[in-house]
Image (cartoon, rainbow, N blue to C red; front, side, top):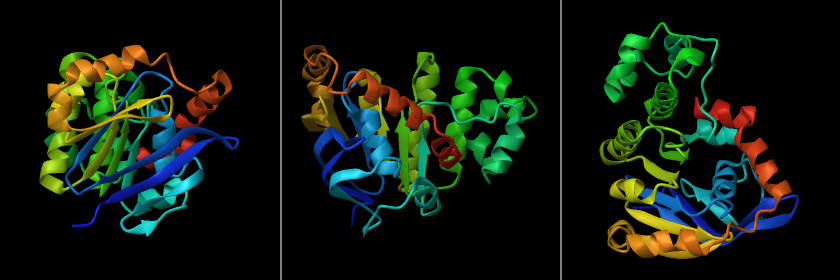
Length: 255
């Protein structure tokens, strides 16, 4: 079986300045890879490069066995869904219309998150943070993607909502064979749903573990956060990353 995505010696950053160095991994169908690490470790920069929003400085990314340098919208058409840190919701449209514009059926969304059923006529901007993220993930998974990129699904959400989101991701991997790369800061919770974990420090791989090893070595994983004093992303580079993460192209791809 071939990997859905293969990353070999990837180096990427902003304005020609590297932020992520020599990153390599494969993600197989039905596998969940979790990228962990402190703020500034290079996790979101990695996701932007995988999505085609940032150019590679060195190395290569193969998606579906083909080396990719296509922009985000073309990768989305080829089976990639990208859920960014910014919730990708059209706030002036109802939940129903948000699903429609993403070409996802109501039945599919309700199968993932039954609680959305009673909110179909509510505008996106009036949904709770958890409901907005459920909507975003329902649109991403409703397309049956080959690859899901999910950046900080749990950001600012209650623990019960986070569990619901991570359970949906795990189910898509197990039942649809979706390959998943997700960024999370809550290691304890995320590792319960993970097959492979990479802890990033200063733009490089600090630890590369199976999900089982990561769960048994959780103290070591968490220590990696404490010993890494931020990362090698300067304030200007962090600002660029934030702008990319919230760009219309990124939001469009997730929907």
